[in-house]
Image 1 (spheres, rainbow over the protein chains, first blue to last red):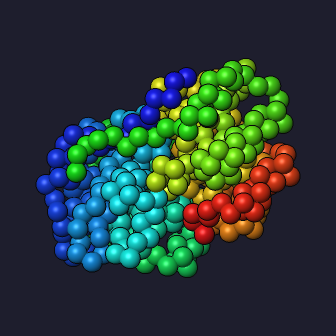
Image 2: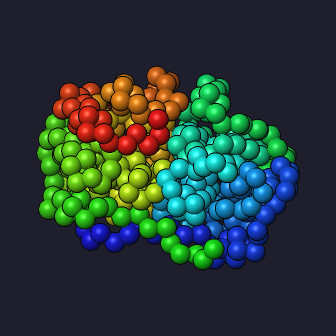
Length: 187
Length: 187
């Protein structure tokens, strides 16, 4: 087995979208951006109905985005949040986003167990969620072992959590995905 | 931001080690292999004291390995288990290891919350753990929101879990890492 790198890249449309965006002000506008990533990911056929974006806390500067890429990249860990975190860490040049400036992760749906743990390790200071996990569960996605205590663990670690921001708009994308026959890759 | 790939690679010594290994029979021998990855990762200064290896269930063929690479790769998600899973999925050419043959993941320490979720999504059929999570916690590593119910969730999903295989040998590497001043990157 050669030591070729495992390559993790955004789909082309998403790169263009990321490059065209510099900063976004306000919770709802940032969430709408994450939801739009989810919508375009479905429309372009590049993955599941989930998007995530990381912004600096001070100026709302966009640092990195992620879109669900499990099937496209053949990588079960490539949820939108994990991709956004890995890319943001590369952008800041550190294995942690726990920097003086501070960063916020906007995700179009509440994180699964893996992403919730990954968010903890990322050093993110704020987590903002759109659709509730039950919306994903309702169309067959497993969210894994996530409990009320899981969120308390994050908050004890100093992460500010806001849930249900534009939940209905985000849910619409998730339901629409299923209606058009999108793959449920972890059901 | 250009769409350059995020590159995830083993350290060179690990590639050589992986290439030199074809199959290993027996639970303890496979766990010893995972522990040895952890030991070498510390000795070579390429990461934290954690190693993981994925074997086929039928012939015990080595599919992929992973070593903790958080600091080396500047990527907080690069725990040994996540790396092994991503590499194994590339090796089998699918986003899931839920294949007729079936695969087992050997990890030198019980998984953190992120890896536990990641294991669930990977389609792994057996999870075999060395050191208990408390050993990692004792030297300052946070394991995140992992509860007894988390393991029950895995088992309900059809994953066979065995814990505490060569736990003392695995724990020795973890404690030794701390004694030589190794970084606790998520404490």
